[in-house]
Image 1: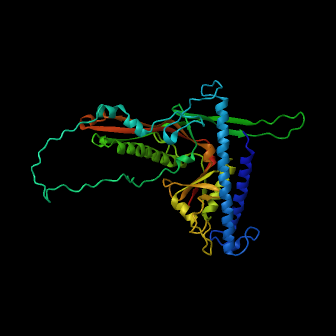
Image 2: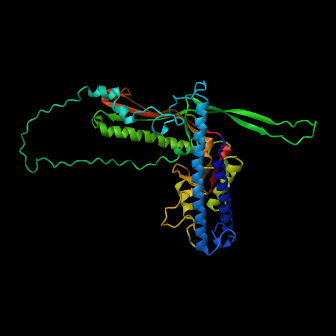
Image 3: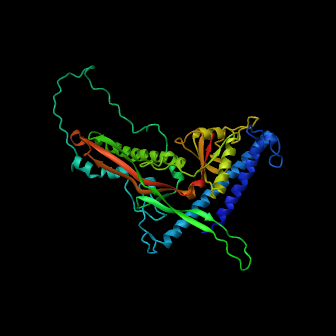
Length: 422
């Protein structure tokens, strides 16, 4: 489905990117704005830096417009797909499509039935219900108080614990939301890739022989892999149902998604690992060399847009690499990305910057994540409870386990480009 507004916005974004790219090229690695042509910037250094900031703000606005319009385009395409062909091939819309749990709810805008949270499923589980009984546990106290309550043998003052729970400081989820998420009912995602495109079309005289072109296709497959974990819990801890429910609902799911985040970046593709973007064969690369960081990123964008024939929509950077770009200054000491008193846009060349602590410092990734990457979920986060693990039954313990099954698909490797030496 053609979308003229998206094409127009992409054209404006590319034009503005080229304009600022020329400014950085003329300023050089030393960021000497006095070397920039007056046809691009005018006035003293402060005025020129302000003009760059204005252009960068315009880039950010254009980047957001392209992102919003791309989402509208994808929603329209998916709605049309759902209307044209149901999952049973009958031609009727598929109204039974569903995804995983929480952040992995799937489907293409089709309403989902209400789902219980992990904690609610745990509290209602048969294992917990059987252990507690129909009216709850019983406690019997039988003792005599024979010691005189004096200062030394008295009752210590009661101190109540507040309801605040401080989670362990750990890496947040930072990359998973870059990839479109779909669902699959198969053990792998299989698709066809056009690997040969020979266009011999040419002007031919009347009666002449038609030039022969060629196409070839290759079957590709990305297997579904499982990311699991479990936590042992004692019967005594289960007395605090509200606290245990919170831990199970929040932390187990977080652990799984945190590992998935790392796999999206650096998974080596050897089963049972998923294949992360840095280990995809055929991905392009751009060395920074003597270029300023923004120049190297822009050159990677051009490679994605030309060689990859895609539309780069995000830049993945380690926070330390983004720090180096955010703190760039002119030869006169003026900050390029805005004064320290300003929050500043987390965008470069109009594209969203995703700061990923799991990424290796010094290497970034530019890519069209919206159109040529996919997280296909076989089953969302699933939780189960049992005391049959090892000797847990006689030790009064339960094993609470959770997992997710999903496949990572990188449809066009050349739609992505690493930037090294940042």
